Image (cartoon, rainbow, N blue to C red; front, side, top):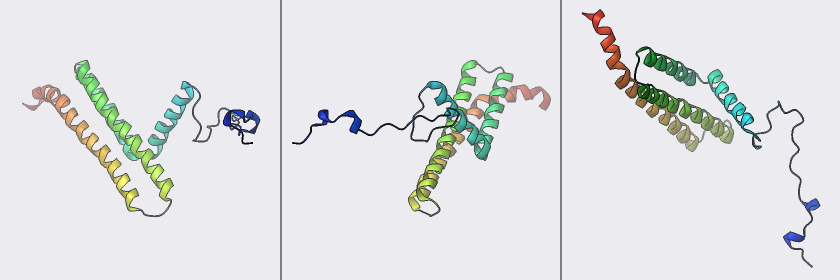
Length: 156
């Protein structure tokens, strides 16, 4: 007589993987963070990885710092500083997504060339490029007029 799913005892079901004994060791990637602090830790590790290994991410971080500092020193309205910060944040977030996509594509194709892998990587890089050009446009629109005004006494 066949058994129904409800009649299968729980002892016959596979058990869940055991929790790691040392909680300071990051669990394998297929496991989910069990609390918000661990999620923030993983996010911080991703940002730290990008700062250590990705030249463009370091450039974006430096430019973001300069742009925000310049906005504050020029006493721009808070909304302008917020727009600058959001624009730079989008560029940095896209750079992180680009880095993650490149890692996954490299993992999938290993050491071989595949045209679809090239398309995926090129499109992700293109998205970062468009966001960076947009950020430059926003920065020029918001920073150039007050910079020009500040420079006027020294030019004539």
